[in-house]
Every structure is written in structure tokens, then in C-alpha cells.
Length: 386
Image (cartoon, rainbow, N blue to C red; front, side, top):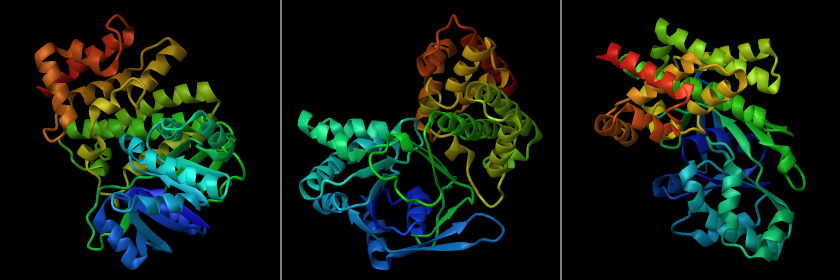
């Protein structure tokens, strides 16, 4: 079996590429990083180390790579004959790879007319649907009909911590032992791809929100409070009793919503929350609070990990979540000088005030209880900070 995977970075190699290899695929990585592409073609293998006491290493073989800037026609050929196509490039890069995917799928229709599944493994809601939208932008109506018959873009939820790292072997990757890759099987035409470790479900939304409102929310809150406390390492931030209590309370609030919305078993969800917190506290992962907290404007959008669960909580319970609003305030206070979005928020607050910044960044209206609580939390935390 043959896989084409866009993105030969740490997540691509250490998460998706590893599972594809373990499922028997020969994987072609597509990337623009010439050094990584050349190394993959020279070695045709790499190692993945698990961040745990055992330090187990896994060998990934039967891989090669294509530089999509230099050899786009080779990428088209690979897609045309692939058994699965995946991507882990970052949400903002999906539009940039959509044209090549469209060309590959068109060529596939002329040669094989066999079904193909394309999965965007991104840290976003509806990643595959977004990729499909971009792929379809350049198609004729007749081509869209043919694509709908043969090609599937099922949405997915992915979760694995792969910290920033520098290794002597530039292909080696260290990842946490835990991972989760959930795919919406109801959106697949033809046979379901055989990938070990993937959970196929008929309704993805509960798993999307569980991951976003537990892993992403929790990770961001620890990062922002850790940064404000002068702590640069994530597992050291979790060792701080006050931060530990805050994250517990935040995930109690998101958990209350998730259990009510999707009928998750309360005890099972509580165990899931503790597992997630344990992952953040993993001493074998050296992850910087400024890496996890980066791009606060994106994280503060009303459809993302901080504001969205707070809105859902208010809608579900007609009450204001105290600790989620603390987390939002902490993100507004994040002033890391090397983060362009953090600088933009701080400039906005300085020039136009916190109320303007809250409305601009979160899209919340000033007359809502949620807005007012965020404002209050920000004022309280600003006073303590100063």
C-alpha cells in the first residue's frame, strides 16, 4: 500500500508517518524543506523516540520524499496512484497544497477511477472539509460531480504532543507515548482505510469538542498562567499548586458542558481529564510555555479553545464559567515580546483599551455577562501582576 503525506515536520514524521508505517504503507512525504527531503531520500528511514522512562525507539522504514516546489509533477503522479493521502502542514498551509492535490485527483480520474480518502490531520475543526473546499475551488461542475463520487475528505481529530526539539539526527523525532486519531467514517466513500491506531466513528463532533475543550483548552491555560508566573517549562508549571488548581477547575467547567452535551460517562471523562493533565506534566517532554501559548489572537477567536467552550457553557447552563474566563484573561495578559500576535494585542490594549481588545479579538459583545466577567478577571489579574 502507498501513502502520500503532506508535511515532513515533526508531527508528520513522529505521528502520522509512524502510524502509516505501522499499518504497512510505503510513505511518500511531500514538503518544501530541501534538507529534510534530501535526508529522507538518502536514508529512507528514521527513528521515533517515545518520551517516557523506557526511551523506546521505533524505526520507520520504506519512506521517501518529494520537494513540491521543485518537482510538483512527481507529487501529482504519487497522488494519482496512492491508497491514501494525509496532511499535517498547519491550517494556513492547506490552501497552498490544494492545487497539487486537485491536479493529482484529476489525473487519478483519467487513469484509475478508484476511490481515495484524503484526511487533513490538523489542529482545527473541519480541517478536511476546509481542504476539500480549497481543492474544489478550481474545478468545473462536472469535475465536482466526479470528485464527489470517488474522493472523500473525512474530518478528523488528532492529538499527540510533539514538542519543539533539536536532534543531532535531523530526522529523529521525540513524541509523547499517548496519541489519538479519530476519523469520521460516515464521510468516507468506498472502503475504510486500514490504519492501525485510528478510531473510526459515525459522529465526530463529540470527539472534536472533547479534544478541543480538554487538551487544547487545558494546554493553553497552563501555558498562559505558567508564563505569567515566570515559568518557562510546561511540566514545571503543572508542579505549581495554584496553576494545578486552576487547570483542574477549568477542565471541570469544560467537562460539565461536554458531559451534558454528549452524554459522556462522568467517571470515564474524569479519568480522561486526569490523563490529559498527566500528559502536560510529563517530565520527559521539555516544552516551553511560550511555544504552547504562541499566537494568542488565534487561540482567543470565538470558535477556538478558550472562548468557544465559555460560550457553550453559558448557553448550556445560563451561568458564567469563572475559571474559563480567568484563562481568557490570562491570554489577554500574555505579552511575550517575540510573539507578533501577543504584541498586537498589547498594543491594542495600550492604544484603545481592554474593552476594545476583548471585543475585537473574541468577537464577544460588551453587553454580555461573559464579556463583563472577562473584563473583571483581566482587571483583577492586572492589579495582581502590577
